[in-house]
Amino acid sequence: MKSVNIQNKKARFEYQILDKFVAGIQLTGTEIKSIRESKAAITDSFCSFKKDELFIVGMHIEEYAFGNYANHLPKRERKLLLNRQELDKIQKKMKDVGLTIVPLRLFLSEKGWAKLEIAVAKGKQLHDKRNTLKDRDVQRDIDRASK
Image (cartoon, rainbow, N blue to C red):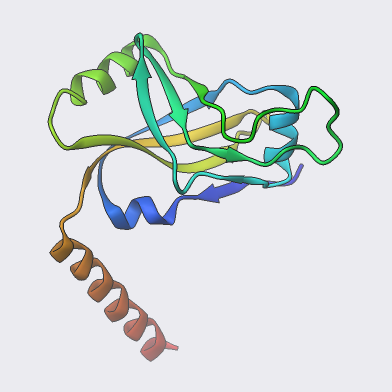
């Protein structure tokens, strides 16, 4: 089985990660087939609560190439599967102003289930982003010098 590891690099740059969770995703048949072909994007997506359930909004899963009339909608909202304690913990943290839930990584578990690593995060200020870029450049120079 081919491994799938779709990253959201933009989230790690834009946000300061406070707490991580791994959630299952409620998918249809053609959606999981597209994910297994790595035809998904989570860069512009976020998570939100609706009636005590967590949904991912804006995640793009390309239509399955061999799908028929029952093919899925590429940008539909998908329910995230977490246990009640985790949902309550996330909801409690979301009471703080300025926090959001962002997806970090979409991957397949050992059993072949699609999983989404999500994080409760706080937006970075402009100077924090500059520091991140500067640290990345310094690390790149160190790596070059050590080769």
